[in-house]
Image: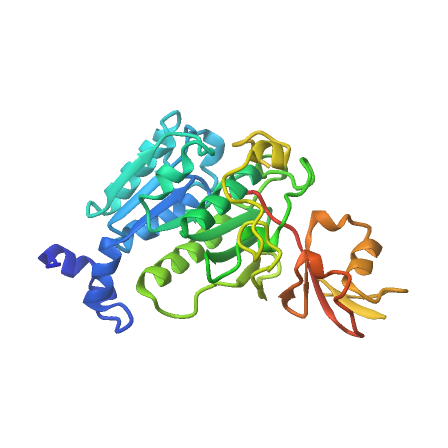
Length: 271
Length: 66
């Protein structure tokens, strides 16, 4: 790939880094990353990945921008209230970097569409807001062998990890079953510090870029916990569970299941 | 036995393995995951995973939010 003079200037601070360089920037421009949700985590992910020159970004969201989103979902502006989040996010990305080809999916992810959508992408960045979708995304990524860069938040705390199937553990190795409905309240019910998804989404963005460039130590088999109030982080090791129903030695899940029934809440239902 | 649970030192009676610890914490084993000395314990290994004086326990709950 030959960079245009504008690109050489735009990505100069990357190209000068030996760990990135011109070759690395080419990889970023050729990468295909799908963002699940254009919300709290999706906003910083979209903006920083766009700025970094990820050449192809997909965004899935079925929601419209609401006034109550703007405390944390920084890709959307006040003028975007009432617009589809995917449209608003696409404009935010292309306003920042016209190099990025954006594909939007104004749809609810479910068992009928997930495999067709995911197969087009290299890396999935999960910033969704409910348990049925978390398990759906996990199972789809394991079945397709896609890397899932996971971020999740609650009030003042966040979790980040990279599920890289088949070598690393999956979401079910960590959390075999969802908590019962209502036990872990959603952000809507429990509140969330607006800046928290900024921190956690950017930790995800770093892991996405490390995966594309193949640099550093990825969070594969490691769960990073972030506690904003204590200003503390902790890394926990996670091994592949040989008894995992989808990635273990004796698989009992070989295709997508009914995730609403599994979690006891409708898909897309927050919490 | 003294254990450190989510950063807090606590005293436990008759707790020898992870399954007993989870029970004494009053939670159903299904509701959260347990890391012992910085490493997740697979759900099926709770009974056989013995605890020792001063072990560091992290109770981890999944977050739905994004």
